[in-house]
Image (cartoon, rainbow, N blue to C red; front, top):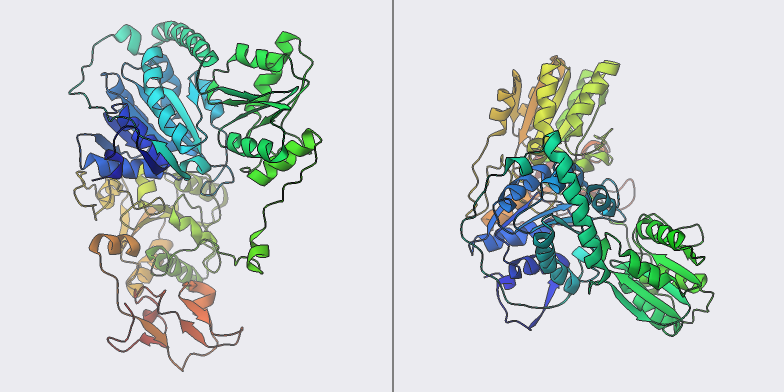
Length: 626
């Protein structure tokens, strides 16, 4: 049984921030959880799927975030408490639904987790989703620790039901992936079937209805602002003529900095957890006696702008600063040393605390670089190689719009198979534009999960508009980048998963694609021949590369491949394997002219390289390591 389902009230457990969110939802009696996996929010869905196999919790991995939000909205309209989780760019996908759902409102409590990613650890941008709360007019809570994540999740359901609108729970990577102590509460029972009560002149947003709904939404914002004024999640501590206002994980760094700098009796600290609507009276009263205030917040100056507006309205002359060349940057996530340094500089106090030692000072040498890379035995690498060699043999240069997933790492040399990327599903649409504008040979790449997420309408458009490019769908049987979650097209289902399989080739044909090839990329000669045929055709062509992610297949079967391969003495200096393929299991023994070797611990036994290099052969049977 999941550890999130055990433990007595009052007991302390160590949970990830994401696990704490799940526990808070369970204690609030959540009945349905929907998500599309995306780092740093993925563990929320993973844990809820596990729990749904053990309890009556309803859960689904939706095809994209918009669908996830709409499914959750439907259930919330029937009185169920629902949670919808996604990463920050996922809320962009769901934004169309979000803006109007704020008008429609909810009957059961609805919590929307938006997990931001400062420093872009696994994202294409680092947008600040606090502005979505302001744009949609919805309440927002921001936890700083796993303990707060659990408490705020639980409170958010009640807040949502009181105001009859969704509530945003905005986290960041550092909160989602920090493990900390969490105090358990009692688990709540889930309700039976809900009921949808018809009220079309309140829930169908034609203009006449929406005009009145906007009035209700503004009234709910006023109620939320009044609740924020007295919220226990907004904490004031310390004393003095200086002030700091902060939110999220930055608040933890500030607390450490004040302690280390000995400023507890000189600085008043306001740590906000209920950050939209801003508690204007609380903030105004906090600012009034102070002479200077530092705002510590990651990414955009959301709080800083609000504080300056409040100070202006009150006629206060207090100095308020946050972002600036000598203070905090709008770039990347913060860390304790940076916060302590800026706090000391802003308040002009000496910092006697020792700076954290850099890893190289501890280890005596710099940490080795560990760039991301496609795994040894990845089917995407095999397909990229076939496309690369096919273009080379045909004497044609290709342009490669790509998409979001593991295969984005085709960007890296020696594959170099990524030229343009915006967002999920953009490879197909941008390929259409590039091809039409240039007449160049365009090969677009998209993964199986991404294809179902947002590739379907783009492909329908490409067929309808008679565009001319080759689309390669890299089908590895799972949503691999975020932890092997399922999607409609998966052929290898997790044990007990109730989803129905939707074959990709059937969906492609249904959209009107007449030129379709399906290959196993590990069968090199067949995939190379099919690729050349597809490249020399015209119009919309789709090539589906089907082979499972070997890590996923290994995870499901519990068995590791045992075949291993070695380089024979006949290997010369062509270096084609390194210059064009670049499997991470291959390396030069020493220096540029050293003997090529295959690391037996990294080799997956896929046998792809054996098919195009006569100097790579199997190790004797039974001699490879498990």
